[in-house]
Image (tube, rainbow, N blue to C red; front, side, top):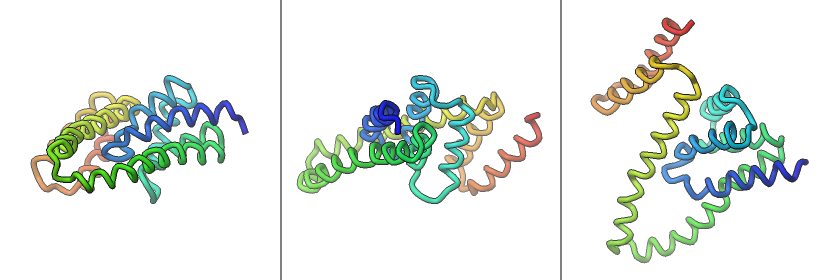
Length: 175
């Protein structure tokens, strides 16, 4: 057990715990930056593998955090990373829930709720852009992502159909 590595994992994920507005997806961009650029724990390809694994397995979207912790420091790293991402924000939300319920109709509370919506959307967009850059799919990946987003916004097309079309394009275009 490397205590320095565990301390680094803790220092990365405790602050991110407070930024998970909109869910775990909203912090993927910074998890990537911390794991690949700042600490050099893994390559872009390794991060993408962990991200894909976290999405195809059942459980919370924040499973990525546990996988990064595992990659960095084994079982203890996974445990520390998981506790660091879940406990701080859970304690904060528990405390704030009582205040929120008490002052629910107050204009300030409504303003905060309205202000957090674009923040969450922006963080999720940043995560998507980070993953597209790390995947190195080039103009094809960006085009498929953009067109899929437009299709989802403008119609009731099944997302699985869009995934199938994107996969087919990948097979046809990529070497």
